[in-house]
Image 1 (tube, one colour):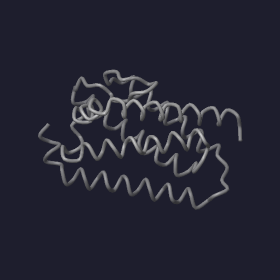
Image 2 (cartoon, rainbow, N blue to C red):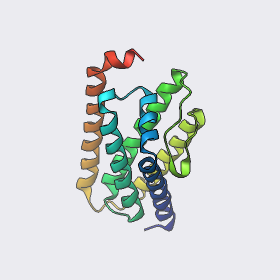
Image 3 (cartoon, one colour):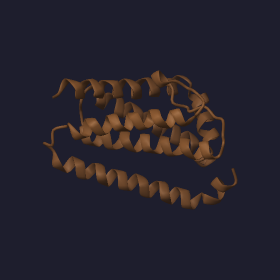
Image 4 (cartoon, one colour):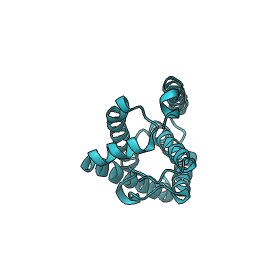
Length: 168
């Protein structure tokens, strides 16, 4: 494996690991950050937080130990796209809220620089993806299936709770 790709993978692993550990250590603050985004229905906030932390830990270890590359990148890219969309939605709402990122990327108020940072991280993940060996072809199909499933789930949840989201 190319040393540059390995370094990028370890950087992404460090970002996801420190972010998830920070969310565990500051769990109550993380729940408040989720509430401040006003996107996740109130009755799902704690479950969402736990799923988020587990997903980030999964991605962190797989980036660091270079395992399950396609599945990991699919999950990580989905998370980053969702985070970025949530930030953009709240920027358009003019909400002055904490990003809830944690770890080495910090907990700052959301801004367009937060979106730019996320886009750089997404770009880094695409570089890793495009330079990964293509030895397991079914994995890329699994990632596509996973992303479609996540997007479908987001659309279903949004359509079900649309009236709740519009009241914020």
